[in-house]
Image 1 (cartoon, rainbow, N blue to C red):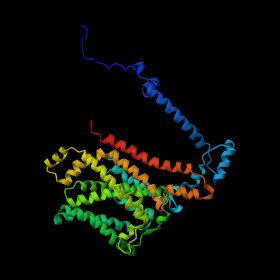
Image 2: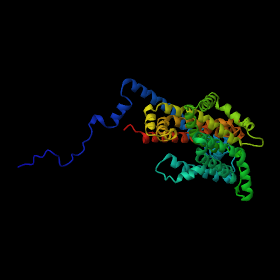
Image 3: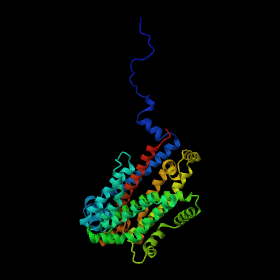
Image 4: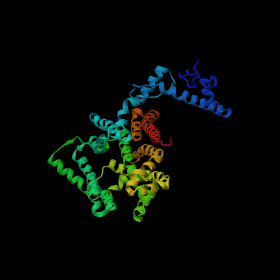
Amino acid sequence: MSDLSYVRTEMLDEKDPPGGEAGIVTWIHKNLFPSIGSGILTVISIFLVYQLLAGILPWMFKSSWTASSLNECREAIHLAYGEGTEGACWSVINERYKQLLFGFYPSELYWRPILAFFLLFVAIAPVLFNKVPRKVLYFSAIYPFLAFWMVWGGSIWVPISAMLGLVVGYYASVILPAVIGSLGAIVAAMILPIVWWILLAGPVAGMLQGIVPISIESVGSDKLGGFTLSVLIGVVGIALSLPIGILLALGRQSPLFVVKIICVGFIEFIRGVPLITLLFVASTLLNYFMPPGTSFDLVLRVMIMVTLFASAYMAEVIRGGLAAIPKGQYEAADALGLDFWKATRLIIMPQALKISIPNIVSNFIGLFKDTTLVSIIGLLDPLGLTNAIRANQEWNGVVWELYAFVALLFFIVCFSMSRYSMYLERKLKTGH
């Protein structure tokens, strides 16, 4: 008798897709010419792109890299490609790229900001990727103080004394709840570090330096500039604006009237004032609010103002995420017996942050690009340095080459943040 089994015992070979569903012709038809209107727009777009590239690419590649002035650069281009040829003078980048990257930082000390930049990736790795060992977070905690010391130099006890302010705040949050309650402990944990930094950090650092003198060559902020300055201001603003923005968003929804009024007033005031105005305040007025004899470095003052400005916008982004959380999530946290802070940390805030990821990263990108505004108050960011370079008689008239180089630097950083945002959204997507 023959085998009449209804169960197949071997797999069939894969078949090729139908001829009308594969191939380059089908892809072009589906993506570029699915209809008459789309086809017309495709042809117009191709024509515009061709015209743009036909003008830019010859200018980019018919260029000079070795000239020492704009006139020499133009002569070299005319000699190589013929009279009347317009080409890019990349020689200015070849000669001044160190200045665009580091400002007037001493060349023999370039290794310090370079090392601090690469250590930044080590510090943020455990924050961005959960596969990195959690022990690296200890390095992440001390990195801001280490980077400050490496870039500015001076006594090592200055960043250590500043770090002690956070230690004071931590122990206040641990010890004081039993004495003055959880809310009072939170307020104390925020106020005590500020008091320490303003009144005690300097004298303590000076005393320790007298006992154990450890220092490296100091570099003034007037030497700091270029892309290094933009990265410093941007990283500090990004790292601090998110936690401060979260606190402001929670404070704006607080049932405590005083806390709510303070948070609302701060957010609305900062959002109603241009960043340029705050930068002028940082450069001229901030020292008046400090105790007599206290002097804040201009770059540090700018970092404070940029952070406060970004925090106000971040608070509204976080508040939008909190508003999107269903009421049932709060009720579920109450049903589990969680207090406000545990419910916020374990249930509410993770969901709100996931919802807000695109807007958070957009704020970060905008903040990083806004660092170019510091040139208005005399700090030489990359755009400020382009003006200084063009003021030199040898390079007077060079414009697009400098702007293209600066734009490339900012594009690399901003595009990287955008791609990480997309990666994080895919990773946290729970719709499936």
